[in-house]
Every structure is written in C-alpha cells, then in structure tokens.
Length: 261
Image (tube, one colour):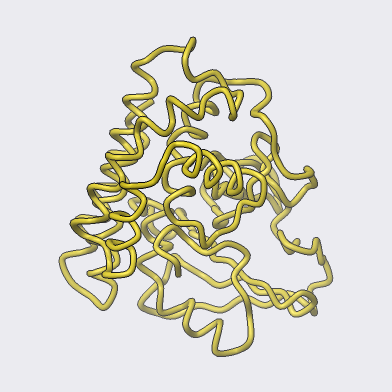
C-alpha cells in the first residue's frame, strides 16, 4: 500500500533539481513525505480506528495534523507557514469544523484539509471500504468511491488495449482512478468534438491541456504511452506553465492541485 507514495516523492525530488517549477516541487516533495507518514500511521492503528466513517475517524485524522503542520511551517510559503503556525494553536472543535467543511464542499483552496484528507481517503480506497461517508452527489464526472472531482486524466497502454476511446481520471480526494470516456468533458459532460480543445507544448510532450469551450474548464492529461516514468500527480505540478497558458485564454481548472496551481 505505501508503495503509492515512494515513486511520487522520488519523482518530485528528481524534477526539483532544476527548472522554473523547482521551488514548487521541493515543497510538494515535503508534503508528499508528510502524507506518506500520515498514511502509514493511520494504517498502523488498524481497521478499528479508521474505518471510513468520516466523522467517526476525525480524531484519528486530527492526530496526524501536526506532521503536516511541521513540514509546512518549515518549507511552505510565508502565507502557508503562518497559517500552519496558527492552526497549531487551534482547538480541536475548530479543526474538526475545518475538516468537515472541506469534506462537504471539497473546496480546492483548502490546502491543509485537502492535504490531510488525501492519505486518509487513499487508505480507505486501498482497504476496499465499500462506502466512504459521505460525499457530494455522485454523477459520472465525480469519483465513484468518494465523490471527488478529477485532478487529472491518464492514458496508458493498458487503456489503449482495453477499449478505443478509454481513459482514466484520477481523483483529487482519494487519489484513486476510474474509467471515463476520452472525448467527454469531465466537468459538464460535453461530447461535441467542435467544443473540445487539446493543447500541448514540446517541453511537456507527455502532458496536454484538455479544455472545453462549453463550460470554459480544463484539466491536464498525462500520457504514459509517451513517457512511462512519469508520476502523474507530480508531472501535473511540474507542467505549471501550461496552467498559465490555459488561464491566459480564459479557461478555469476543474480542480487546483495541492500546491494551488
């Protein structure tokens, strides 16, 4: 189970050695290490403590918050570091409210709640919990396990072998994947080819922008058939210049990534 995190951390460390996103990736590598520690702690306490009832599991989840706050206070931006120090002094009820609010809304600007919930939700998915309590209304554009919005799209040789027109979406909450039609907008379900646009750049040959002119939303697709060593969550952050390009053209991202891009 914990092998999920190690390739992400290594990829973030490798990519942070140079380039215009080096600072973002250095920070993200630290957050990923904290998330791995949170995942391993929650997994070690056994199924009797973290079982998928979100409100029931809040105490176990909040016991892991100092791990995240310490990393962010040391390596985050001034704004995030100050917020981490502030949260360190908050009472349990306030912190519980923060997590419950995030769980109900899945607001992608709630960095601390999102960063803490991700390893918990991933653990529940790995354990095969049948019903993670409880999520936004489910439709085809949301994760069937936890109701999260898609963080990115994936395409691999496995997808091309299964069925023409197949791809996967990766959930921004539980970080699991689900199949989704390739030529469909994951936000508004638009399917007309004339309203769907695809953009890329030579320096990010395996990453592309998929945009919808009906709802003006976009997200990124990572093509593992072009670069199989990519770690999609990390490569999505590393290709931040594509986000700038998309926003300059009036598109809004379906889900901001964990570093706020």
